[in-house]
Structures are given as C-alpha cells and as structure tokens.
Image (tube, rainbow over all chains, first blue to last red; front, side, top):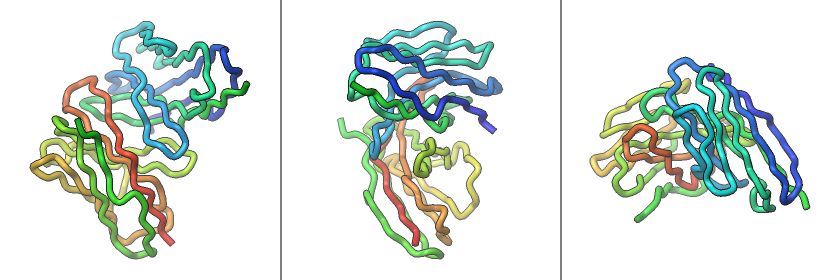
Length: 109
Length: 113
C-alpha cells in the first residue's frame, strides 16, 4: 500500500502557526505535493517538493526529507478561511499521484 | 484559459446500472487522471490517460474503464454499479511534464441507490 500517514484532524487558533506532518513509503518516490480541499470543493494545488529542504510560498511552507519519507506543511498567520482539509500526495513516477486521507484543519477565533 | 470541467455535477443511479462521466481537460494538458473520493477520505487513484492510452491504473476492478479522445477530453465508465460506488469522482489534468501539479475539476457526485 501507499502508507501515507497524516493526522486526521487538527484545531488551531486564528493568527497562530500550525504544522501538519506526513510520512510516506519511499519506494519509487519522485516528489511530494500538498493540496488544500475545502468542503464540497475540488482540491487545489499548494506546493511541490522534490529536493530536501523547505520551500516557502507566502504564509505556506512545505518541508521534505526524502531519506526519512517525511514532509510537513506549515501554515503561518492562520485565517478562518484556512479551515479545510490538507492532502499529502506523494508522486511515484511520471505523474502518478496518490493521496493520503487528509488532515481536517479547523481554525477557531 | 479554460479550466477542467466535468459533467454532470450530480447523478443518481440504481445498483446494476451503468454510468458515464465526462471531463474536459485544461487547454494544453494531454494527461488526465481520474480519482474516486468517498466521504471523509482522500482521493483514490483510478487510472490515468496520456495521449489516448491508459498510462497506469489503481486498485479498481475492470468494470471501471475509461477513454481519452484526440482533444484530450476523457470519459470514465462504470458498469454494474454497486452501492459502494457512491462517491465524488474527480478528474484532473496536467501538461504531461514531471513535477507539474494536477488541476482538478469540481467533480461529479454519484449516488447509487
């Protein structure tokens, strides 16, 4: 199986920082996507990591460790609109993307 | 630039029936992937088409089949529908290059009764 592990639910306060962790099997690994999915909507692309290290894009950053099969998504200055599911999605080979169950993040005032 | 469009948006079918779902890929994209997303779960990979050929398949039975047309639009066909096939079916297109993100349509919500 794909063995993509991420927490099912998290709660954080508006204005705070939250880190969503993801571990995955490293066999055939090419890179890792993070997607955001609001309830009832399609997933939208957030980030892609292929090299080890941190990629920063505005309030969102994503980290990858290829050798450890580990990634995290860091959300800073949380806003209410960030309440959504965050999907960790390893890519194995050419455009073959598999998704974890997703982490449902609730941002509270 | 037109995004990924799927039709219909909602569909209700009876167990045992057949269904065809349609997807128009984003302009310039030659790769289409189909996913099934049950409530509270992540999207599960069904299969992928690249330039009209199936280019990978997930753990779904043969009654799930597909096509891709010369204009890169695609169909997902499901035969002998089962209650567990009730889900959101997502189509995603990409330009067929490594590291390119998938661009998702809004999905078709299928209910099997």
